Length: 322
Image (cartoon, rainbow, N blue to C red; front, side, top):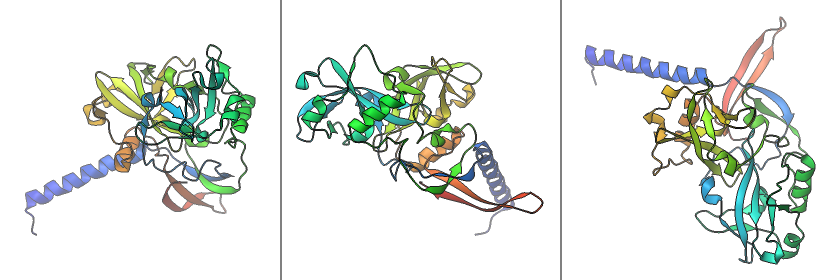
């Protein structure tokens, strides 16, 4: 098909604009390099793109049963490591079941089966094990960052502590200094937060301007990962990738590195119409918009050091998953 000179000029301009937009996105991505570290002890699919998602607010108070379909209690809270986005525990209350009504119990997330929809969550623990489970008083919560507490709890429920497993060395990617998310995944939890405390927390940007509050969290229930903080600002909701979120030194507010003028309608959604967080194309565009490396993809570099000490990139390839 022959194009007129005007059409050709328009096409060239559009192509140039697209190239500039793509370059801008790439420039915002963090630089990453490969290194040899201990093999990930997370499940093989821990860094895979989520096939489903849930709102954290809808998991709170969700009914919990055992494999015999006996009612045990409900989820009171969800405890996370804010630095890595890993979900550590579901905090359960068991009502009058087995006389456990006055205590709460921290259950490793891996011990739970979470069906899709609003079905009851299943805790695969028999009655005797539950009867003797370590609990804590509702008014005196433990220090979830205490490694001894974590080890005791994980061991009791026969879950291998994710920070103590043994593995072989492999090549993985090393992201920039601000990307604590992937590097922290298999380290002991330090910055522990309750979901109930995060929801409603005020949010500031790096200019210390107030930009709303956290309305909810989107989570990957199968892999135990926080996907997004749902920011409410001027009547709109925004899906902020969790690696783009940090907490102030006193923990009183969350921080997102974004200017107010970038919180536009093009990246917002109505509170009644949530996006599909299992749409990989949408998720990739969202992570790129906030200048965050999608955790389900990595870039590997093979480097060669010449005799004069210069480093040359020998091969670069995109890789999906871990």
